[in-house]
Image (cartoon, one colour):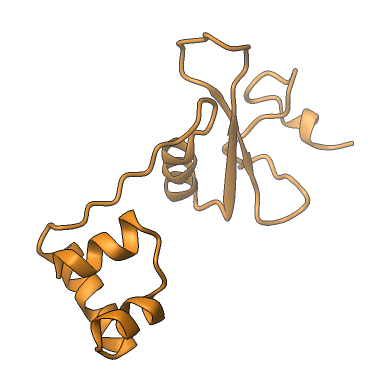
Length: 115
């Protein structure tokens, strides 16, 4: 199992090539790779580049029932404060009950939503 995991993840071999080299079926290689994750031989680590805030985006989507939220940094590089977020609504026309307020509009002023 560890050998298959090393061949796949470290050497970048395809499952079909591993199967041919070890004289097993490709589905067997797939099952071994899945099992290697389950028993802790393989660990997946996701390293996000600076300025990517998927954790906050997912939190906003869950909290407000959004289809998609996009979080952007309000400042430049080196900024340490929490980034501002602008949720995307499911509909194209914003409503006063939205979790977001338009830029430059104080919270609670419903007139800002109508044009």
